[in-house]
Amino acid sequence: MSYEGNTATIAKPETPAPTQGKRKTILIVDDDRVFSSALAEGLMSVEEGLTVYTAENGYQAAAVLNDVSMDLLITDLRMPVMGGLELTHRVNEMLPSVPVIVISAYADTSTVLELETQGNYFFDKPVDYDHLLETIRALLL
Image 1 (spheres, rainbow, N blue to C red):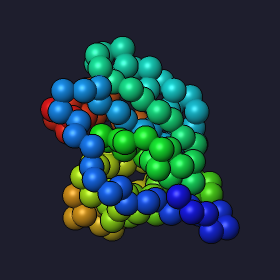
Image 2 (image 1 turned 90 degrees about the vertical axis):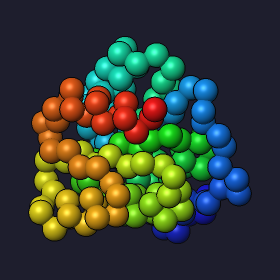
Image 3 (image 1 turned 120 degrees about the vertical axis):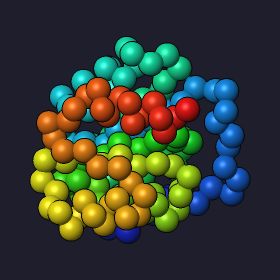
Image 4 (image 1 turned 90 degrees about the horizontal axis):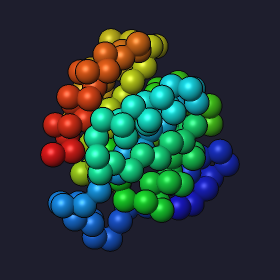
């Protein structure tokens, strides 16, 4: 990973690691620690075989993504340092096999359309946990 000011570059892996039959790994990125912790704990309590990491902004997330192979990224849009939209674009470009779910209370229609056109998933806050869990299960199986 390389750093430029307050941004980070996500390195493209040389060969993707197979995830079939092993623990699934999720990265939750949100500057609201209460939300990200509650979501992480909730997911791990209902799904066996999950490893969940959290980060408070895209900059921290980029560092985690360079160190750990992820099966799913869940991110907020509005965060300090590097927001979720920039993070999503970088992950879509450098790690296209990693699905991205964006959760936000502040997205406008054009942003949601842009995200979904690029193959990402969008949920409004407050999130419908059952629908989110259903989507996560579908993406990880």
